[in-house]
Amino acid sequence: MAYPNAIFSTFAFIGFLMCMITFPWQLESWNTGTCVFMVWVGLECLNLFINSIVWSHNYVNWSPIWCDICLSILFFPTLQISYANAATKLMVGHNVAIPAASLCIARRLYHISSLQSVTVTRADKRRHVIVDLLIGVGFPILEMILHYIVQGHRFVILEDIGCIPHTYITWVSLIIVYCPPLVIGLISAVYAIHNIIQFRKLWNEINNFPGYNNLTTSRFLRFMYLSSVDIIFTVPLATYSLYAAIISLNPWVSWANAHSNFSIVPLVPATVWRTDPETLHAQEMARWIVVFCAFVYFGFFGLTAQSRKNYYLGIQIIAQGANIFTSRVAKRENLTPLAFQSAPHPNNKPHRSTEVSTSIQDNRLDENHEMYLKKYSVPAPICGENLCRSMGLNGTHIAQSSSINSAALSASSADALNMPARTPINSMA
Image 1 (spheres, rainbow, N blue to C red):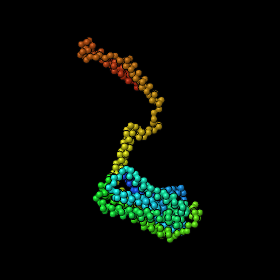
Image 2 (cartoon, rainbow, N blue to C red; image 1 turned 60 degrees about the vertical axis):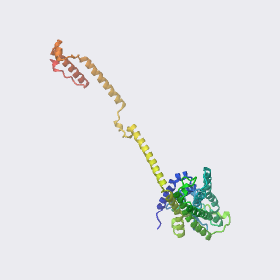
Image 3 (cartoon, one colour; image 1 turned 135 degrees about the horizontal axis):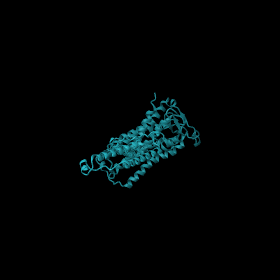
Image 4 (tube, rainbow, N blue to C red; image 1 turned 60 degrees about the horizontal axis):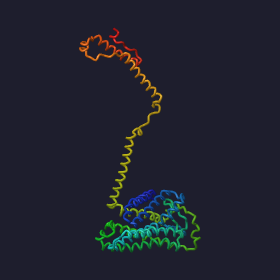
């Protein structure tokens, strides 16, 4: 029973993240071979992830342009399908991309261990970078161009896998497609053996190599392990691919014969390609080996102390950004608190004419109140009872003045409220 295709999609996307998350500090260290390895593996994981999503449980030719980009520009084939019997043949990585990146790493370790007494200048580093790019990027691009010579079909679509390239297997395809990864793997193996010998001699001197301040014994070991693991897989798998291609070899007739069915896109359902054990194992190994390379790389370089420190710094930057965002939102709320409150109902909103009429009535009440105060008010004596008697004012004057003032206040209040004024008892008398 086949496993759910979503499992591979999940691991492929995780592999892509693993390669990309450690890319910045590898780039800062001028580790060109490692960066090339990360880019090829990461992009291939992304390619496999997208294909496994788009062609999950279907084999419809949704996007021919996307398949052309995947096969002709970005990557090169993990598997080849023979023109004669449609049997899948296992290839390694993207044919030469991952082996070439491992060759760059092994070659750099060789120069470090062999030229430790020579001061490495910036020009030397730049020259090493250029050579590494020619090997790690130039070889795959050259293979992409040459592969068109033996490309029998535009591409092939397998259900649950997506687009894969097609190769018309002849003696020409042996030279262009099947031999390069094996040759590159053997050259890398020679470098790796030399690096192991030199490492045993220079165990205590690696930390003091001039021009390589960031190189430590542990980092040298991790680089050597990464290139060695790739060599261990590259050489035997490339050998098997070459053997499988030789036993199903077709004669080379002409260019027209090789490309006679180029426009035909074979669409293969899962019930067909999964029933053949050879095809099933080859296809599954071809795509899972890329994810395995991503996990191997992350195991060597993504769990180091420096990597954990960079993760912590990244988390701090994200947290600071979140704090800045939340503080801005809080400040915005304080400046405009009404913006985050519910709007009043339109029927409850006062009309402008109502506000104007209310203010006019208030002004009229104030004017009437002042008029009544002027009409009825009599200046009250500003003296106490004993002082007023000594000045010739008796209690009648005091009572009259008090009653007049109270009457004035009562009248003004009554007029303001449109109520009849209550006449004081003393003034009625």
